[in-house]
Length: 126
Image 1 (cartoon, one colour):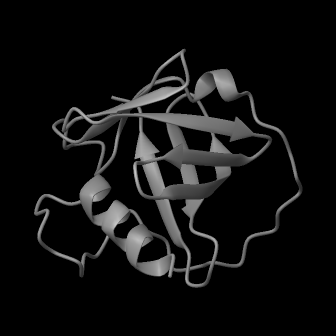
Image 2: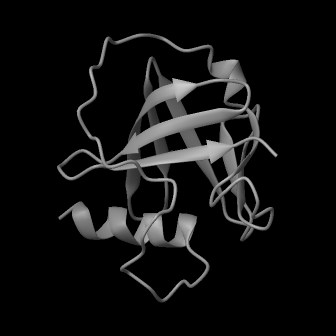
């Protein structure tokens, strides 16, 4: 079942407490009605450091590197792949899949998951 690994990923990725599976994301929007147009983004904008909790918490971050690896603030280092508006992050036992909704110089918005309900998350450039 993909829901549990995705929840675990989201908890590790966005929370202060690694033991909590019930986390409210302050940046998550309630509206999940999104129209996908199979648009391609300037994926070079994704590379670099992004804050993963809020633009004010500088301790939780992710860095999308040029060599298509992701480095997390907890020192995990895993490969990722981009295809049009989709992102795939390859962990040891699972693959996190998301759709890019918005990508600018200062924010990236990703809709994570393959089943409903999906998690909408905004990342911020420090």
